[in-house]
Length: 330
Image (cartoon, rainbow, N blue to C red; front, top):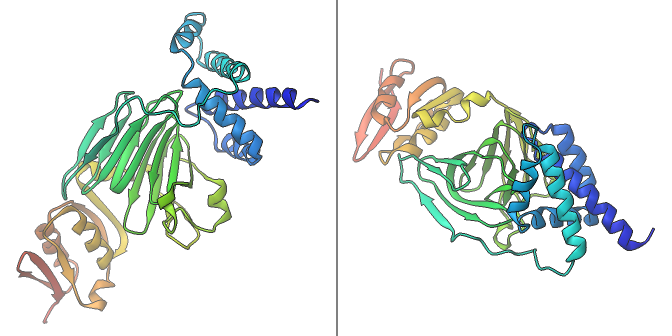
């Protein structure tokens, strides 16, 4: 088999994979099979070419294909478009598609401590920014790219031919049509999948070294596929931790509520402090290690502190603008 024929068949296979991965209900098994196929650098390159080329093919071609398939599902349309992309690459192999410039100037959104903001992007995707969050949106013909600088955001992604990428702390979370939550703390990244499927892999940007995604773990280098309810926690120099939660709780913060399930008082206070300029403080190690559960309104520091007195032997004192929690004198 000639090299040219091999490349043509490789691109045809990449086009089929592209079509399968557009399904909003794509299964984790399909993702795993794709990742196995993509380990071959030549396969990965072919897939990237298909993905990039679809972004520059005349969109009227897609409209025409849809018109010929009225009332049918979108898979035949996508397959035809992917096949057209494969043919386009063969006919224009020298076309520079690797680094297309964004169609729109990057947009930056930010919230202050205690604020939330909901943004609807031009493709219909919805971003909800939590307290003290900054992110930048860059859309191009080949991808939808979000850089989460700090904070937390919930992404409800509208299905599109272009992949939706969220970069945060050395990681890239890749989705097509799905809903997921990403939180970026100082040295930790957390990704929770609510519905659909995403793949989390290391970012390859120059400033990602030493961050949460730049770990030696082999699994992260290949990418980790999440199922609904999966939570992936990552810290620099440590293996990623995959756990399961109730996906309905992932975006509870949008309702202004914080739910704690058998966490230490110190952990609960740290979370409460994210939502207010009034800071809770606890200096007693034994009291900080006490465990609590419950749902509390975010940003209501005084209410939270007073409610603790119903369950734990403690006192609440004002100290300047802070609230000090100390063991009861009794």
